Image 1 (cartoon, rainbow, N blue to C red):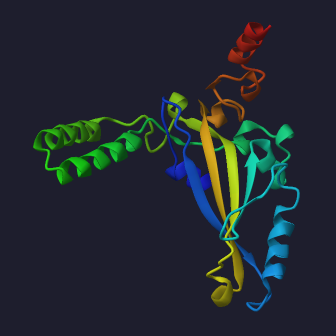
Image 2: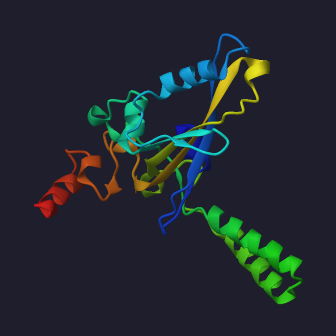
Image 3: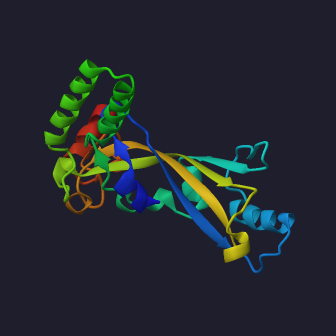
Amino acid sequence: MRERISSKAQYTKSGLKPWTQITVSLPISSSDTTEEEDLAVVWAVMNESTRNEVKNNANGDLTWTQWGSQNLNWLGKDWKNMKPVDLYVHPVHYETGARKKIILKTKLRKAQKAKNLLETTKIIEELSSLEKTKPDHPCEPRGHHYHWSNYEECNVIYKKKQIRKQTHKELQLIIKIRTYYLGNGVPEENNGYLQGCASSELLDPESKIYCLLKIMEC
């Protein structure tokens, strides 16, 4: 999931919180297991994963929702004793213009469908200008161009209809995680911490900016 977030998720100055989704497989011994046996496997994986009530929709699909550190506890992470470099997602894409391109392309399709020549021309010009703009996320991000994100919400979904059960002897869980922008800074240059962010807990205790924030907090 960290790799998928790092390569696909887009963050913006407006505070966009993107969703990222993966599918994971749970092997089972036989394709002839009963529905109750399948649920027992899934419940064993999700046991004590959340304090929230598990949602059950009309199709019988189950959704477990976890927030922040709940997700890390479920994955067995000792997050209280981990440095940011091992805990958060980095580097991530920040202000690349990709989100704006998607919005403009959607508007373009609508304008073309409505045969609005003036609006179509305007959007094409905006797209062309955006393509020429250098993104704030080069191939090898450095310094303030190295960005981080944090986990906010995690939904684990078990669909009652399991299409791979018969052919692959496995059950599948869909995991959807919403993340938000955290800060910037190359971890190798900051002892595994961030360089710039709103919380002193994410900064190197030996750094000058950490001392400055601590003074401001007093």
